[in-house]
Length: 238
Image (cartoon, rainbow, N blue to C red; front, side, top):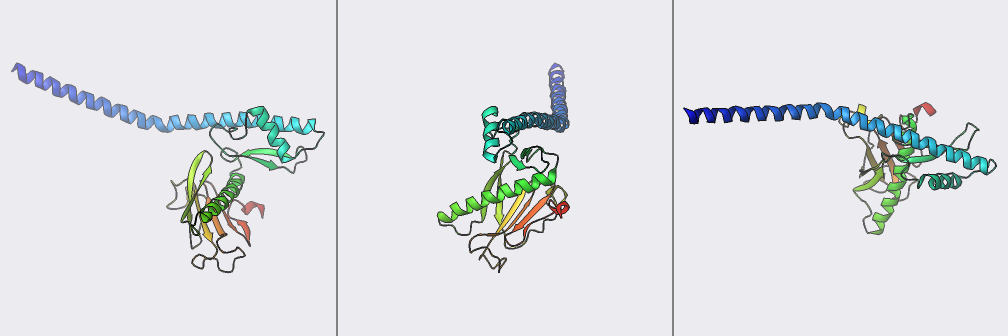
């Protein structure tokens, strides 16, 4: 009898431990979204503070130069005051120096991850990615690969992959509202002139990018050398 009681007690203890573990796992799963929200929110606040300080340096440089300022002047002023340019956003967001038309100062700063104008973020990010793909394509072709099936690029602190395509992507909006792409985050596709006859008649020379399609969670941007940029991130500009 005594042996059976001990065995039963151990079984109950084991069940209690398992239940406690399950409760802890469930608690962690419930807390993860909350923790993630506060982490992202703290990064947004830190980015806003950093951008505000950097903008003050741009304005000071403009005033000190008697109202004359080039893009290099502005970037150098920010980099000198902030210990560099690439780390302005603590979350790794790509920061752009953008010309303004409000007459106060010639340039402003935009974080491609946190700025509230998401269409502007998509336009700036897509242009930045396209330039990276052109550079990556050139390197690939120098290495003897004229039609690379994929090219990597960096954006907002992460590495991504763009894929060669022989048809239009069909992207009309951001990935968050596009069926099948809801969890992809960022997607990018490119076409090459002379590859499988795609975009035949394009002004792009053989081997050059003749089509580019990009989408983040919010919006999309598509580019062709003859038609320029289109997509819902450009719609309100027309």
